[in-house]
Length: 138
Length: 359
Image (cartoon, rainbow over all chains, first blue to last red; front, side):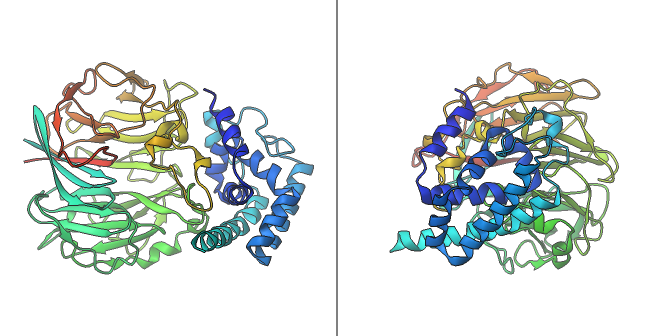
């Protein structure tokens, strides 16, 4: 089994609520986790979802602040996509060999823009979790 | 006789190991994530839990009572007892929590006070535990055998912090960021061993500098988890290694939905291609894979090690997640599975940590 295929398959099966949570979650990671996760396509999944209208609609169901966060992350993602660092493709997939062990000890994902993404993403993750838990409780 | 403690999702077990092992529940219905045994007086034993705080024992782990007054987080991941800072009730006890905070007890784990300056560590706001990235936790604590008041806190993910004054002040040591295991050794002054999510790190100068070492480890294996150092040979280190965190622990990150990380420890939901193996490093030699007598790496998650202070050279225990017990007495060259009699009232064990002592 190819774990990347397995994870792609698992992501495709998620409902929209879960995709928003997963997208916030993926963008929330610290640099070290991003270096590890990029090779598994998690940032690409997050990118592909966060730029859709579905993401904005789902965020609107959560909270007005969640919409702001989605827009904020989209802006940063577009900046990165316009001029991606050597280790990323334009849709935040892994460029080169991001799974190499030395890559894990480098300084990828430590550019200032990533710090601008992580903190609002963590806030968005909390908002989305709280909202969906409340809904689940009725 | 060796006494083995297994911290489990379902509680804490004490095993008398003497050729075979007899297991008894000593705590039930708590998720025990760490066990700390006083290195100078093993009648003092501590267990920390995810959800129920700290428990303490003064009779060699036969009975436990609730301790941890003052620890404001119920999510207590890590613990250690100082061999050098001694009180009337054994060694000073350090515990670490999620969110990342450190606590200290000078009365045998009854009460703790927070070591507040830990929050001033640069970079702590950036630390993030991947399943719950809005937070981080102290995953491991090590106390120095040769420097009084020196304690190390391994943050997942956030590096290793050191205090040289009993936790009053802290500095970042620049170690690997994803601390999964952190050990000191009584025969190796100032030496620290870190098993990190990206590799193996070692310091020989009390954490002033660290050296990465993965010579001999195949490129596809980059996820190091638990680790043991031979109780009689500080140059013999054994780690568990996997391909990545998912195949190592049997976690699919997309099993979690709507904010709940479902499946993190759900063996029924694991990916079918888990892989976990053991590698050993002796002195300056390259890492070498250990297979003789161990379970097949394919289809297994990373297990946990236990060693007992003062045990015979070469004696190391390895426990798989569902509780199979293996022992080597030759430093890892060969392993034998020891029969274990578990209580009959649990279907499926889930081991979080293992610790051992001699009795």
